[in-house]
Image 1: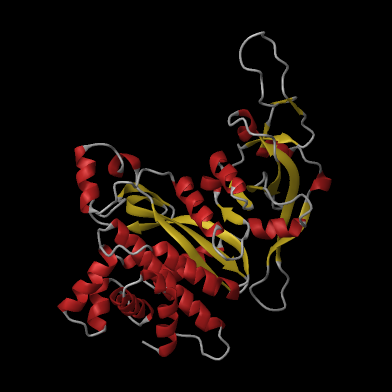
Image 2: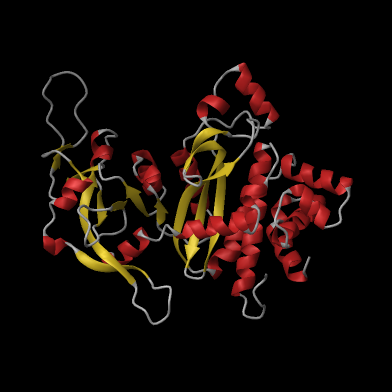
Amino acid sequence: MSEELSAFVADVVAPMGRVERRRNAEAYIAGMVAEGYRKSLHPVVERQGGDRARYESLQQFIADSPWDPVPVLERVAERVGPQIDVIAWVLDDTGWVKQGKHSPGVKRQYSGTLGKTGNCQIGVSLHAVGTRGTLPLGWSLYLPQDEWCADTDEVHARRRKAKIPDDVAFRTKPELALALAQTAAGWQITRAPLLGDAAYGDNTQFRDGVHDAGLEYVLSVEERVTVFDQETTFTVPARTKPRGRKPSAPVADREPRSARSVACALPASAWYKLPYRDATEPDTPPLVSRFACVRVIAAHAVRRDRRAPREEWLIVEWPEGEDVPTDYWISNLPADIPLEQLTRLARLRWTIELDYKQLKGHLGLDHYEGRSYLGWHHHACLVTIAHGWLTEQRLNPFHPRPD
């Protein structure tokens, strides 16, 4: 291990406590950044010339050692985050193909990574995206309810074998994502608008939770999401019965409309050609498309959740030549934000795919072969450290970029 890598790891793994844990972390991370296709434990130890005792020590460190990955991830974020000029937080989920049924969270389920249903694990992750790089902020393994969280003897036995703590209950992917965002919001790092696909944007409770945490968002939504026009008036109905609870929920003076209906009714003057991404080649113009950005009030939060009406942005993309709008987003960013900033944020989520590509293709994120719930989170944390170190080295003008 180089002196630079050793110093970086020693700094960020300090929350692990015991010296032996920190030594194991150094060895494991060195294996992640070293050459070699497979980054699972056995080939890593073999390439480092370790023996059986070394393998067992690292295996216990990953699968069973009770160190908390969250303070370590916080340390990485607070060290590397300021170097990448953060402009957004991006959340998504990705799949790990697995054989058998014993790895925690595994089942036949749809994975966007696979593009189909397959036997896999699904992990939810949060990443900081900046003008100079990216950085994972947190990881959570999704546990399907029936197979891993039901109150049956069979499920209890599976959980024990996978070393899933008793207090880990079923949570949806949006619930896992919200918890990651709330955790990161408490760190000493740059807060930035949260981006995510419609699996998260369509979830009203998720959007409200992010807003209540004091975070901003630009989230994809489906065209069927219903909203009220900005001109909608909300009033609390007068009491009509002498007894019973006095009405307190506001009622709109009109029915909501789908996002698509709103978009298709907009006049031509509402649409602008706006840039959404800088060109990848020098001396070429940025990529542009046709967008409309209008102020609306999300209907579900008012009608179903009895929340106070809250104005937000509805962002719609309708490229020239298309018969109908192609994409929709909703955002709680301020009313006076430049529209170009909205469109650039709306279309920035694709960068997370670059993160997954490096984390999986180069650092072995999907090479963990253990069957421990804690081990999965430990592995993801250590891969994040490796990712952070490579980012820091790339940005250091006094060192060549690591291979």
